[in-house]
Amino acid sequence: MTPLPQGRAELHSDLAFFPPLPRGGALRQAARLEINVLEKLNEKDPENKNLCVQMFDWFDYHGHMCISFELLGLSTFDFLKDNNYLPYPIHQVRHMAYQVCQAVKFLHDNKLTHTDLKPENILFVNSDYELTYNLEKKRDERSVKSTAIRVVDFGSATFDHEHHSTIVSTRHYRAPEVLLELGWTQPCDVWSIGCIVFEYYVGFTLFQTHDNREHLAMMERILGPIPSRMIRKTRKQKYFYHGRLDWDENTSAGRYVRENCKPLRRYLTSEAEDHHHLFDLIESMLEYEPSKRITLAEALKHPFFDMLKTEPSTKVWDSSRDISR
Image (tube, rainbow, N blue to C red; front, top):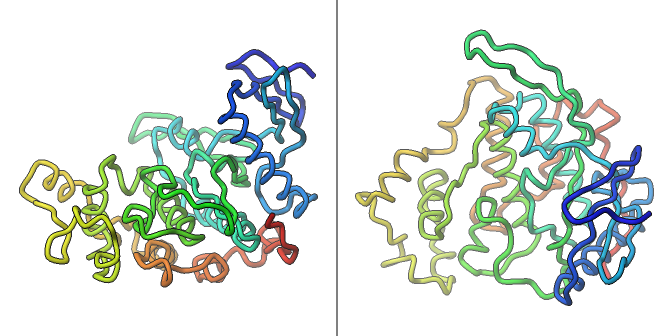
């Protein structure tokens, strides 16, 4: 089928044809790298059980690389935005978080790091919703009918043995070891998931900044001091003075961080046990030291997910075969 002009997409039952990627050597190479990852994922998971987007086919159209995928719904970010940033209910957060952990564990088990996890790259399989009217706020509110999701966008995915770019991840979901240029592996994905799950719960981004020093100050305000070992090892000594973050709380930036950030547990919206379980999980994902950060195998066994264990849809899929290239 002939791809459509740039900027349009056509839907065919369960198949989506996306516009061709622009010409260009670097872009073409990037597309081939993503296709290679997607082919490896298809080999590993031909029945599409591991919750990563399924590539149906790819082809070259007059020098443009084209990829066809399964048809999915809105991203979890777009649904949140269209719903006036109303947080997802905790039972939906639980199921979505579990699936993201499953999908990314599948990648990690196969020596692959996604490196760009964010709500925009987690799509609902079907984003149909029920509408209710909130009398107090005088607005319609949406509740997604099914929280089944897929992880997408493998354009930056990196196998363990491949070159690791110094800076990875979208700013708000970037782990401290990446900011401090200490090197990164799979745990950087776990940090991103912690930020994502928090965002689902409260409806806004945990680290809303575009500056490295301010980002580190936010981390300290929310999570406590950066470990001295990481400070000693980083080449980014310009952010520190005498072993501590060089940050003036009396500047406008300092006041912004103080007024807009608070210790993590203060974001709890309920004292119910499952809310505390959720924040215990988020804290373990936002551990500064990558070596101490929870693994996704451990995360899937966390008490926050206990309510899901009897549901067939949440089984942990087999990941015994290796797909690293």
